[in-house]
Image 1 (cartoon, rainbow, N blue to C red):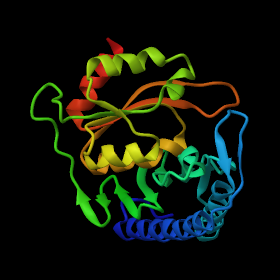
Image 2 (image 1 turned 45 degrees about the vertical axis):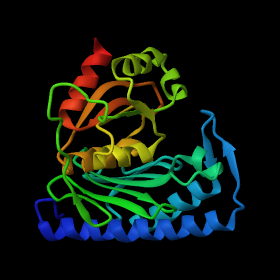
Image 3 (image 1 turned 45 degrees about the horizontal axis):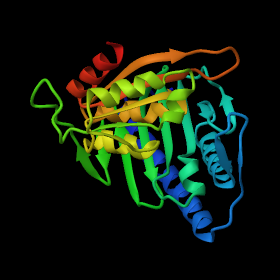
Image 4 (image 1 turned 135 degrees about the vertical axis):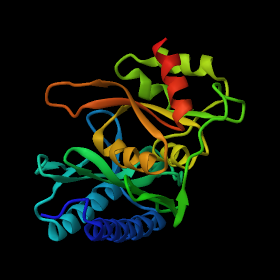
Length: 268
């Protein structure tokens, strides 16, 4: 089996991922523009919509046909061949709460793990028309243009260096709300940008660092690959493992020095 040291195979994977998220974008836009789609709350009180389900079904079908020996981990339909050398991660709609409220900042996340490590990723925003793609050893691109993060020029955050984080409800799971207050006390120039849209901002350097708690592998694999491809860093701040449940990760990512400063403020 080919591996990622094979440049041609890497380019094949990138081209396949590009085509796949283009197809999911078309599906999502058609359903969104139709304006009538069903949604409901899952057992964890997070929403799932008809669009989430159809999008993941499409992605799984394409992946199984193209790469039958690869594994798949998806938010809505679970894990297949999770121990395979190559494993794709799918979050068909990250930001379903935004989708059902007609807020267009939701997106599709597609990632690829190689021997357990995130190596490639795609963040696609069907309504905004934006896309990040790339990863480790091939660079990160935003709408076709290379992204290269520039680190802070000093050992402190300035008023123009923004911290992005998630809403209090995200921190409440696992009783981590105090960490949110630590972030806000540390740097008053902080913003709550929800879900994958904030990942987009951090990878492009629009915000200096993103801090998010209780993420699953399908939320973060693509971002981890993309942030490294852009020259930033990804830092795991903690994890929660519960029997029978996916591991939940607390993470910070973005410009290297900004991530270190915020991680120190949270742990201090």
